[in-house]
Image 1 (cartoon, rainbow, N blue to C red):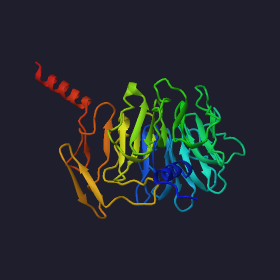
Image 2: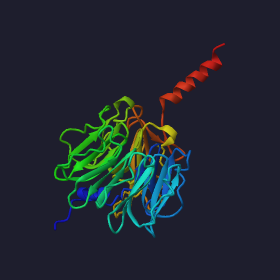
Image 3: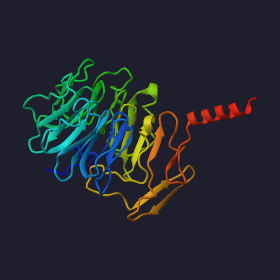
Image 4: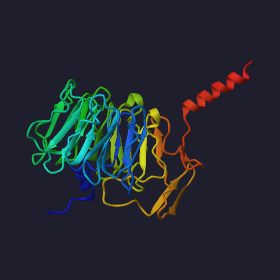
Length: 367
């Protein structure tokens, strides 16, 4: 059998093995450092969902207000964060190959059998997968879940279906699926075209016509993907909130959407790149940290340091202090309006901050 192309291998890795090691949750994001595979999370901390155990992991997922990872040595699942519905304690004692966190539940693929196990909130059936169906890919959404059946590549969805988010096309074969809040999207196996079903009020279910994708991620009011030939990030929907904005020419190895933000692993330098609305600092990825993207390769030996006036390339060895995450806020900061601060962190110029500064100055100057 012929070897798959690198892009096809990436799509297979992302969907079948669940090997993307950066995942955007409701208001937080988690990733795995490379090469240590230690978990890092950032964003909202109210339920300790950004405080993972200090153990190496194979996979990691960020849910609504909880997070989970697969222990590197045991392949057992560890979860932390909000637990009112048993999403961090109802974990089956099994070895897992991949996991996906929804808003209040989590699903995983058992390593040996491909059997789906789900736990957590089940008021609408989102933790009750079809009986006897082996899956090769899995995605947990808000109150529903989806998976791809082994061999036949058919998508199955279960749980809430008030917007049609659990009613996928039955005549198509899929290579990847992503369950969002009230919609779902998948990549057709033969054509690499994206098909979406469910809510489309904000255009989140209307992908670019004729564009072929290597990866897909369904969020709340928007969807994003990686274009097949160029590896460029593309988003649609969510125009009301600026969520369809994407940094120009951004090339990614993986992509993941939260409620109001999107994150990915940069193609060239393995950096975490986030954009959207910066509630709870969920765009503020740790500076200087390369993240695993599922590929069996390390970060490059050179890194490009960007400023608002110039670009320079420097050689690096074991240190990553010159690498910085990019932060883009929806509708506010195009790619040429950010710079690396003197403290090593990114510096953004936000409209809100300037507005408050003007108000304070007026308060002290007007008699």
